[in-house]
Structure formats: C-alpha cells, structure tokens
Image (cartoon, rainbow, N blue to C red; front, side, top):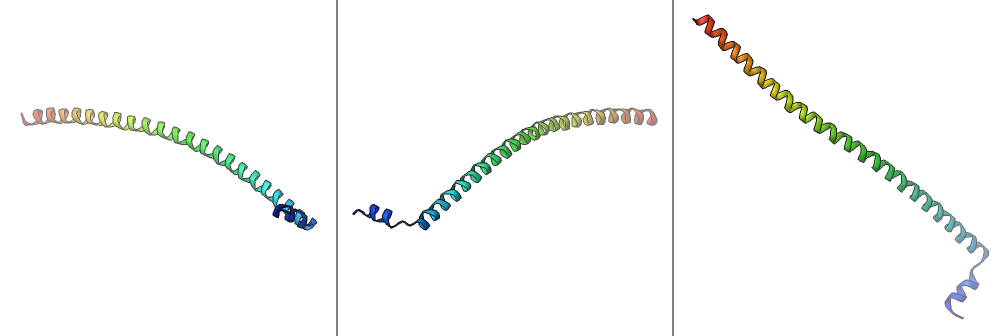
Length: 92
C-alpha cells in the first residue's frame, strides 16, 4: 500500500469531523477576510474622495490668501499715499 492509501484507511470518523470543522472555519475566515477587504476598499475610496476635496479646498484657500495679500498691499499703498498728502498739507 502507498502512504496515501494507508493514511486514508487510518482516517476515522472523528478525524473526518475534525477536518470538516477546520474546512468550515477556513471558509468562514475567508469570508471574513473578503468582507474586511471590501470594507477597507470602500474606506479607501471614501478617504480618496475626502483627500481630493481637501486638495481642492487647499487650492481655493491659497488663491484666496494670495488675493487678500494683494488687496492688503494695495490698501497699504493707498494709505501711505494719503498719509504723504496729509503730511504735505500740514508742513506747508
């Protein structure tokens, strides 16, 4: 007899039940792993969407900051011009 034939003939009902339980546990673990992978993929997609939205918001805010800085410089220049005119009027 081959080793395989000897092992098959030695397998008892308890051994088969034990093997069957292991197979079912493995199936359940596989199902759980697939479900976890699907959840992780959904979460990753959601996070990618959030990141994209935040990047768009960052670009918008940077543009706004640049615009506000330019506006501030324009206001500063105008105020300095007015102060110089006031100084010229008060010193004359």
